[in-house]
Image (cartoon, rainbow over all chains, first blue to last red; front, top):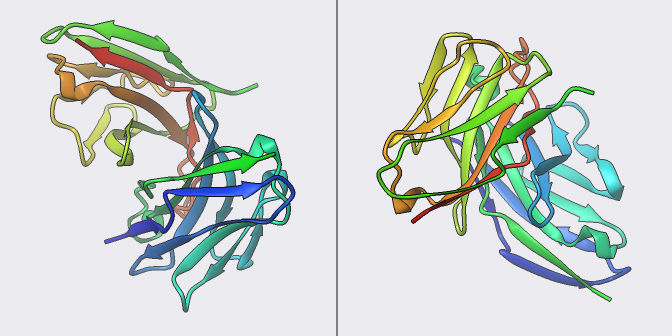
Length: 116
Length: 115
């Protein structure tokens, strides 16, 4: 069964410094992987997704993630944090490739705090 | 522009009452999903639908039901609201792709408080 683990529940960085949010997944098949962001009292917005094309995926707002099959990881990075990046981030795996169901399995989320 | 909307955005109800949360999408997506979000659990799937007249149970379906009479709407009903159903509810939709690698688009959420 597919699963996803976000290794940090809370990450704090200073504005202008790099961001690293860690995610490991478990999947018996070639997974689809996503990062979603949720700002306070808002819905979820797709940052980026991996679907077996290029292993380095570029998303919106300067974020990118690298799919590493050997490490079963899909960490999210950004070279320089901005105050507006403060939010909850979810790493998500889909089992759609195996069963064509399109169901998503969410990690528990990482809260990113950006200090001035 | 196409969008997905939820109503109401906030709801307070009493235990034992029936509550229905609306979800409407204008993308003409076949797939629609309902999730609940609770601290420490991320988002968990309640029910989902792959098309008109199709509904399926997710991992936390007890006490909830859905119906799909058209492509645009998937209302979520709490048959007899319980305090444990206090949560934030998100609706999502996606296309049906042959690859199965769809992206889900989420609504703004409904905050439900059961007293």
